[in-house]
Image (tube, rainbow, N blue to C red):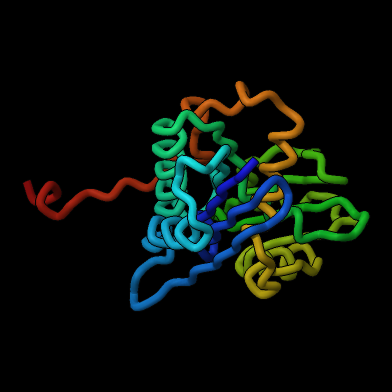
Amino acid sequence: MKILTFDTSLDKTYVTLSENDKILSDVIVENHDEKYHSAYLIPTIVSILKEHNMTMKDIDAIGTNIGPGSFTGIRACVTAARVIAQQLNLPLVGISSLEILSRINSTPSKTLVVLDARKNQFYTAVYEGGREIKAPALTDANDLKNCDFSNTFIIADKTSAGFLKTECSVESNIYTEIHADLGKFLNSIVYEKLQKFDTEEFLWGKLKPLYLQTPPVTISQKIAKA
């Protein structure tokens, strides 16, 4: 089974091609020349397929990050994944950013993932032994302060890590400073789920972005002046 996975929701664009659990190609793209990294998603996919003398018709399954994260990034990868899966009738597996980030933890300790959601709120989830203990949720700062951090491996972005250190006196592992290959984690999780569940669980029409709060609405200047 050839699996194509991609993620534009976090700090970089990650595109990974595998055959079952064997990685064939793994590309990480950062922002470049004032262009947001998600702008390189489709060209990167095309390049990887060409490198392996493949077309999209050779792909057996698609996996993508559904958020939370950058609203622009979530829209980019979810839209691309849905279009490809619909056109080629492929199973489509959506994975949350928090589950992907949880794989950074290689210790036996449970994992708490915390990402800044702004407005004194945070995206949180808890995992242990590869299992979801607490589903992704929007958590208020006061509730986060009251968490039990004992025997917990904390993964956070820089803003959340600062809050946890100042307000909760706990240290975090800042994922953007670790430079982990999140694309490989995403691909691995997708492969695991494809082995565990029937493909009927992964119809493209079932995939929805994981918006834990309302996306911002931008009003054009023309409309605002009308």
